[in-house]
Length: 94
Image 1 (cartoon, helix red, strand yellow):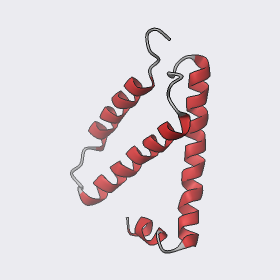
Image 2: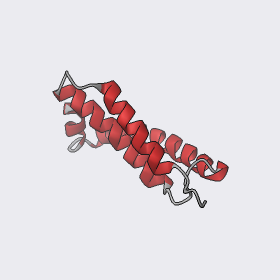
Image 3: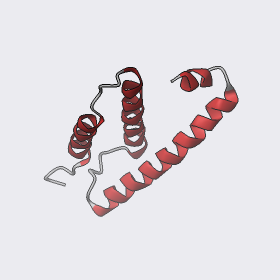
Image 4: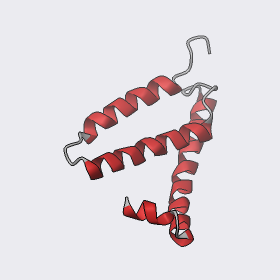
């Protein structure tokens, strides 16, 4: 958490984090686009926005685990998976 905060005022550190996030975001965008082409992901799902949302969920979990050592990562993960499945699932009419 301190490193994330430090990245606000240290461009080199910000670049380091951005590079990592961009790699993960690119992987997620590619997976979502592939899912859209294959019919497993609703075509209305915007790949970049969805990828950023997934990264935000992961960052939120990290933050919670840092400040609340009793947080249940497994329960968090299960809820996130269910939310994402419902979000990306193609409509019945699609």
